[in-house]
Structures are given as C-alpha cells and as structure tokens.
Image (cartoon, rainbow, N blue to C red; front, side, top):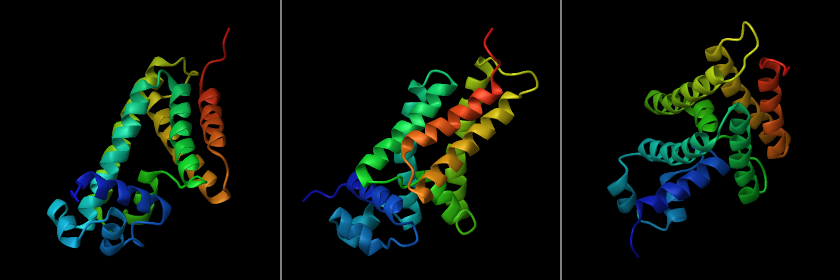
Length: 186
C-alpha cells in the first residue's frame, strides 16, 4: 500500500473535527490513515505539524469558497454551505476547524495559534474589502464590521454545534448582522 500524506491529513481533519486535537493520539491517527508510525513521522515531525497541514487543508477550501462569494451576503452563504457539508457528512454541526483548534490550543501551543490566527487575519482582510464595497450605514467602519462578521461566524457555528441546530441558522444570524449595518434601500 502506498503511504499518502494526504490520507494522513484527511484522516486527521476528520478526527480533529469529530473528537478533538487533544483526544487524538498518533496511534489513533495512524490507525485511521492505515499507516505505520514511521510513515507518519516521515511526513510530520509532530502532531502539531500535522495540525498545521489540517488547518491548511481546511483553509484552502474556505479560501476557495470566499473567493467565489460575491458580496457580504454571499459570505454568509459560503459559511453555511461548508457547515452544511459537515452536517451532512457527520450528522450534525461539528464546529469550525479553526475555531475548534483556536479554542483548544491558543493557550498551550503558540506556534499553532499563530498559524490559525494567520487564517483568521486573511479572512478578515477579505471581509474588510467586501465591507468597503458595501453601502454601509453612516458611522459603520469596514474594519470593525469585518471583525464583527468574523466573530458572528464563529459564534453562530459554536451555538449551532452545542445546540445541535442546523447550518441554515448560521447563515441567518450572519445575514442579520450584515443587514443591521447596511443602508436601507431607497
């Protein structure tokens, strides 16, 4: 059998979402990916290095969806689509891959925290650009609204996760925040 770095990353991505980073050991990861520990360490110096690869895997998909989203409301739809795919695959909302890792590791693994923070920074910049193109109410700053939208996304996903609510509610909450900050038509 050919050892695949991608198979290890994808197995870890699923396990980190459905369990947690801390609860998944190297042996668990190797079993799920059907590889030996030596193969794991051929590709990754540590579980933290694998976690960065998992972040990059998820970030590439989110980046693609954000790039396709035209306007602020489309961002809400893109988030709901990704969470809806997780919901379909796992039978429930399992959370944001970045939010989950940030909450779990931000005080214990600074290098991984920085890696996740860079993803959030990149998305915030995209949101700022979208806010700058939107007809904002007087006094609404694009940078502040972008941070609020990012926080709303994380909060909506977390609440949906713990309350076992559907992905459609995530988009509705994000759209409500956006609407409250846009000028009324006419």
